[in-house]
Image (cartoon, rainbow, N blue to C red; front, side, top):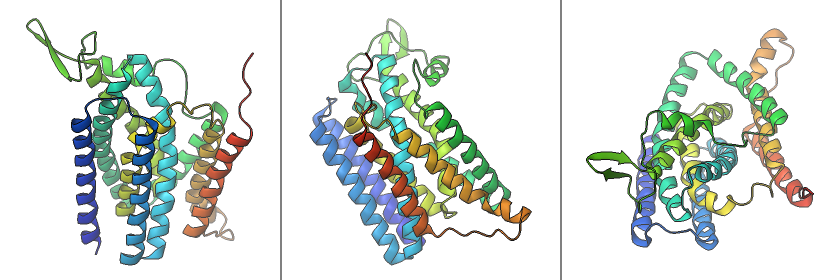
Length: 312
């Protein structure tokens, strides 16, 4: 049954990527209007919901609940990626009409890298259960740091750009939508290619937080990867929908930090039980889903109810 679901999911991902690339080729590199971004965002969210319902019928309601919780956590954490991508494009002076192509190829790149990370993480968790407790402690520390530092978002040029420039020699100007151009007798990469590489690197860095978080919800590699994949595939349309809304959802980073602390605490419970056998707490997947939805929904609602005050 898992094999049938996996084959169906792989076919869907392949079709989705084909549609993305076909849409890009048909319409060309263009500035994505809000209506188009909203349509694709709704399509990806609806696809994830339909897939979760199929999982409920083909596997179990608990597995579907774990999928929805994992998808919600991963999708919410990816909002931080959106705001960092705006910094990347600003630092590289990427024209708006080329940002769509950079995101499509950057997301495809990150999809494969995350798949490798999940395989390694699943193997470690299966063989060494103590790794799961380490993930829990890591998420606790990360969540506390996010609370103190205001999340992942910072100012200035992202370090991934500085890192990528050491290995990717680029031309000075964007030339149409090409990835490589010839200057005289020398072939050089364009800044568009550098943007794709940096997006992949940044997503890999963010996966260090998000993948341990999903293992705190489920140990099933199928659920871990599918929830990650749906979140990543919807990231491009989410970017064009929220790129200018960083200040509007100013409490969201706090909500994400609290979610990581909650999941990290849940993963660290066995450590407490080993030290104090009388404490044995089991959190049902449905409870986890309700808590995550409540925290994220509350942070978004509070952001809208209490907009940030404009600086004088």
